[in-house]
Length: 503
Ligand code: MN
Image (cartoon, rainbow, N blue to C red; front, side, top):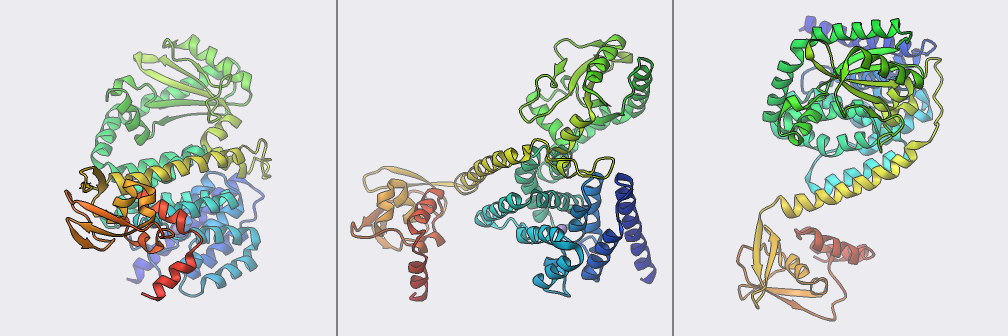
């Protein structure tokens, strides 16, 4: 037992050292003492707590901080990541106490980020109402400080990495939420690195069969050729150097599994029609070098017709810039090359997150174009659209439908367990707003009676009625009824309270 604890502590110590080394590497002048202090603070706060996997809790904030350090994020973000679960989860102090302590030791900037994450709370997918509320919270936090969202992503990625130790129902819920909400936001913000991870980890739990199929396919197509690509990268570097271009970076990367899956759906499931299964990336210093590299590659290997794309002259709508070409390499292998400058590379990998990078001198890159403010507006639009979709899908479409009739024989298509109030609103908003009672199959019934397929419902209205009752929100099932009731009862919370008290 004691031995086991020692091993665990050694792992934690090694993780901490790795984090500090990463920070030092990114920024040799970094003052890592404060990071160490933040670790100690978090470690003490979480002492005795374990993850579902049995590991000490501190491995989780450490992993989140490491993810952000690997993205070269500024130090305050890393410190906030280490502390992100302290207010919510520590048993030795209250939320307020924790935030006050953090403010005192690590400054207001860190404390306000941790507070932002705490406000987001633990996003739990408890029914649609709660879910949408969570989304709204997320966007308020985001508007206040976009760094909070980066920490939230790092937090979520580690939770997805360790999802195996949770019960299957929970796995699915968390994975689905990551795929439907987190990944699209990361995509919008251009944080492709995180978007790819969120999707790939979630993919495994949301579509397990498809995941296995794609994974096996890639293993056959790519993994067996690892050596080929490594040699190709070397040869490319040598050819470029001989031609007088010194590349900053040449690397090859397999396409993310989930985006491959999506692409396969568009390409008749034929993996041989997908040429960017592996992309060879060449990063150079100056923009003219990009075009020079393109020429050198085309001299070496014959390009595929129609596959040369100049996203430098004509960037993609999300701002992505690179030159792409697909060529027949040695042994007839078809390989896609992506050529870009360092700045384009940063933008392509990190998007909005690049604004909180340290450059090689350890100072912050200026907010050149403040593009992220524009992005924020776009994200909000996108999310509101998604929220509407989800509200719509989850409530109205994912549930089984029933058909209910008016006394005249008109049919209303409603979700299962819809009530006479839903029915009234389905007929007309005015009927809903003024309804006072109902008969179901000629029997007087309360307004919250669950309706069944084939019921005949007659709604009684009173034109003197001022409007709907907020109480109805507790039982209505359709989005339409809910939003109508909401908009009519916004200012009558007092009425609602009175009705609750008098019940
Ligand atoms: Mn966490």
